[in-house]
Image (cartoon, rainbow, N blue to C red; front, side, top):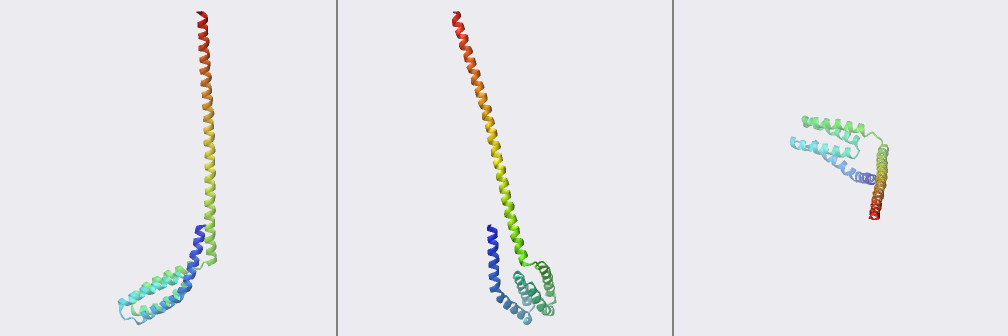
Length: 184
């Protein structure tokens, strides 16, 4: 139950953050693009390309895979022109985006339903396991009580047998003494 509530809280928090941060990310993307276009220093360009990759990751984390692809397509020609060696890193990022896009085509309601079903199944299986474990412990307790009861019955029979035997021996000894006294 805690996992279900936590999952809902996380989804709500992500939704609130994504609404407020989408304007900031758009401004960030424009700023990085203009930095790349106006840059003449190769070292600075390398840093700006890294910022662009981080921006693309942010877009992907927000679920904006198509927007990330468009952004890469926009900056890739500029990077190829100014620093061809860095264009390869953008191609690698674009390939990764294609893979993410393929996996992101899952319907969000199906994903939520799937997560809900997984949690429900997990809870059901845990409850079933607890029920089975409790039944096993109850049966073990019954078996232990029955075993102890059997031991008590056997012990009682032995004590009764010993008492009867001692009483019989005592009676025999008393009879023998009486016979001995009668002979004297």
